[in-house]
Image 1 (cartoon, protein in one colour):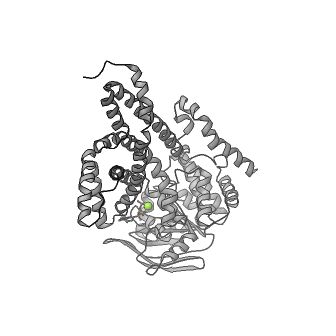
Image 2 (cartoon, chains in turn red, cyan; image 1 turned 120 degrees about the vertical axis):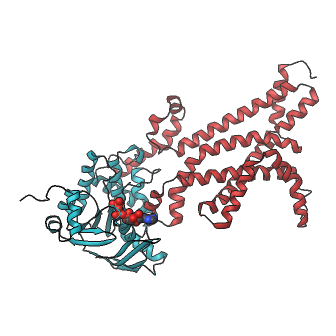
Image 3 (cartoon, rainbow over the protein chains, first blue to last red; image 1 turned 30 degrees about the vertical axis):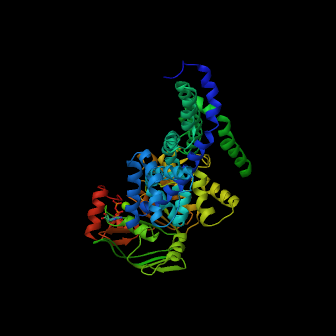
Length: 262
Length: 250
Ligand SMILES: Nc1ncnc2c1ncn2[C@@H]1O[C@H](COP(=O)(O)OP(=O)(O)OP(=O)(O)O)[C@@H](O)[C@H]1O
Ligand SMILES: [Mg+2]
């Protein structure tokens, strides 16, 4: 089976696979957006202990966290149209991609809701009371005091969710979506150079993952800058790498402020 | 100036405040003493409406609420009259020292940013933190954090500042610096209600001492009367336990 290994195929496949990257990123982006919105909405009843909705949101999270994403894809793609048919809604013409984004979105939303819930719970109650005592409303206390800190706590966890999402999108090809993995499959069958195709594919995932990881790490550092002595807390190489950006954000501002107070 | 009338509060079946009446004049420093669980924290929290009293009236300055009828607006107005300093500081951890103090001025009092900044810097200098404006709470000692807490309350310009055991979470060597700051602002004539176990502080700074037990005020009066010749048996017991030595040697 397969042709003799030829490294040059890895390079010729590379741009061809990269051409379908936008489909992969579309799924990631769409699912992430859906997931953040759904996750936030679903977290609310549990944060505010709304009787019935709280149970429903728990059930939702259990289902999407407790069953394989592949099964979820099949259930939504084959099952949802049947259910909607009962309500006389015809979705047989809807693009496959819509089902895929919806499924990944709800899947991600389950993790997002869990993350938000625990992040908000970890901001200590005393700060909220302090916010009330200076006269803030409940809304102001939530948006100005709780949210920013919860976000900082949530970002590392969300980073994992995003990276997992990126890799999970490779399962969308089982519904025939021509994203990267699907494309690599067809290139491989076409040329009989399987291994080269998969190497090329792995490389692209790796590069995207690394880029995403770096971006998220940077965001995390920014959001967590209040956590004990920022400068000393980071390893030296990071400090230098992000030095210039940090300078822009912190030192500049401080200088400006000193001038104003003078 | 501040007048509490018949404040009661229960948690479930446990009645924690049994109808508290208390009057505090403008510029007075009132120290509340009492054993653990006597309801001191709950009383302060009621004045700031962090707990909702079951009944009674709270008057601060020209504003008065009936606790059974208080709506959102009343609570907001009442909180605008008082400020609280917490045992565990409760600083906003994601904000710098300066931002902690400015937050209430800008967000709640809608002060222009520049004015708020100038006022905050001024107050922070007063508590000895003029050099720490851009530090985050995690970079400060407990004593410094509590002084930020005091600055945050002071900057709001409240009619009364409520202190709930402001030094009891501190290492012994840091207690002094915080008490010194509270002493200093007391001298400026700011009305304060202080729950504390620092008897030396109570004796020197208080104009009025209130002894609470079992959710009621057992005895109150000038510090020298309460410390030297307490009338009630419970007060005597409490003082003997907390200060084995006589308060004043003759
Ligand atoms: N949120 C609450 N829920 C239920 N019970 C409470 C609550 N807060 C306080 N209590 C009870 O109210 C009583 C008075 O508590 P409070 O904290 O006011 O006492 P305290 O005088 O401040 O004591 P300490 O000196 O230990 O701080 C205690 O019996 C406590 O268990
Ligand atoms: Mg207490």
